[in-house]
Length: 113
Image (cartoon, rainbow, N blue to C red; front, side):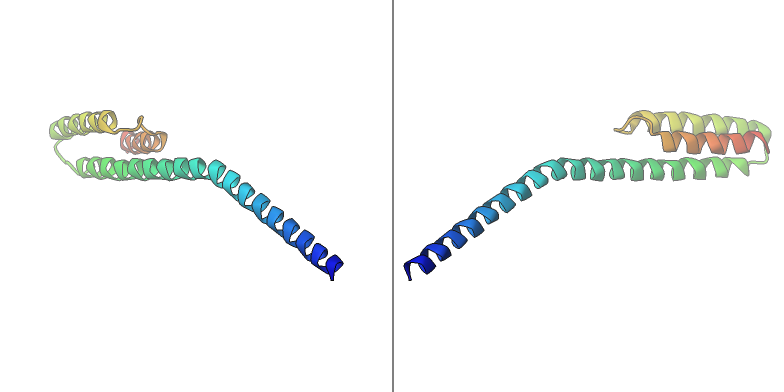
């Protein structure tokens, strides 16, 4: 009986140790993953904000593209560009590359019409 009891005690100790190691590993993984996950969420939010920015800018540019009067077109266009600049400055994030390239793309389309 004593051998069996000792064997059970050893088995329990091994299980306890394995469980502790597992929990320690889980804590380490969480400590490493959490900041990465937060950074990723933050980057996604910034990307989404930049995307919304693009849509607004594109919509404004599209609206001006249908302006038949050349003089008003140019004035309106300058307003849009000023607005874009302001929005980019006001945005908490650095002007995002997607937003910039989207604006650039729209401008290029305009120029080549």
